[in-house]
Image (tube, rainbow, N blue to C red; front, side, top):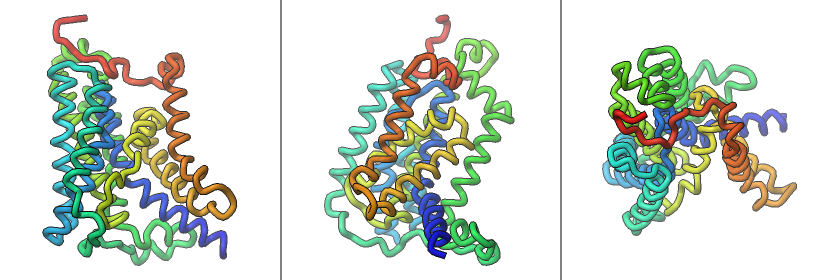
Amino acid sequence: MGWETWLIGTISRALAYGTPLLLGTLGEIYAERSGVLNLGVEGMMVMGAFSAFATAYTTGNPWLGLLVAACVGGAFSLIHAFVSITLRANQIVSGLALTMLGLGLAGVLGRGWEGKPLEAALPALTVPHLAKIPGLGPSLFVNQNALVYLAAGLAVLLWFVLYKTKIGISIRAVGDDPATADAMGVNVFRTRYLCVLLGGVLAGLGGGYLSVAYRPAWTEGMTAGMGWIVIALTIFAFWNPLLGLVGAYFFGALYHLSYRLQPWTSPELLKTMPYVFAILVLALVARGTLKRRMNAPAALCEPYIRGEE
């Protein structure tokens, strides 16, 4: 019974912590599939977290807080889109600047909000019949909020769109060979803008989930590097939404285990596990040969200038 309780708790917390990672990863997958790397995920997530908390605290409506978080994340992503797509600036520099802007702005605006409890948190749900399923029922369908299930369903939907529809073909074509896609009648600039916007909306939503559901409060820097894990997860998932779902929950389990295993080993070492794994993934992909084998978008980070080969 002890091991069963331990396993149920691990799976349950993996789903809870993995949800903001999943939302951010899904958005980043679409952005990178269109050829735009956005390293501003951390900044968009932390701004989403603050705006969701401030809105939910003021209005008493956590769903409105999530809506505002999604809008704020989308607005921030449009800054990156304009700089990197329209102005054709370096995507890495633009993304890093966006992260610094988000962290700084959230820190300034969040002063005075820390320590305030959020009474209007997103409620936890229990699915009556499914919760009775032996083994997985208590971990999957007890005390989870609606956004956990919506995020998992969104992963399936975005996978279907990306691989089974003409829209997905156009997105992948823009990310691999924008000149050819343009010649075939695909609007490269619009496609990239919409994908980057989607990435921002989902990153903001993921941040909002942190402050109105996972940990109903606001603390400066509460995303704690989750945006960088999202970047690694996007690569780890081979730019596939379904693999992103698996990776997000895997990282969620690692994070939870960093607390569960503290009596047996160094807490500091365990807390670094998710981040060390993310660094290893990024280091491996940095090798050109492996990058090609992973089928990365060929035009990733490359600005498109119409009429140039």
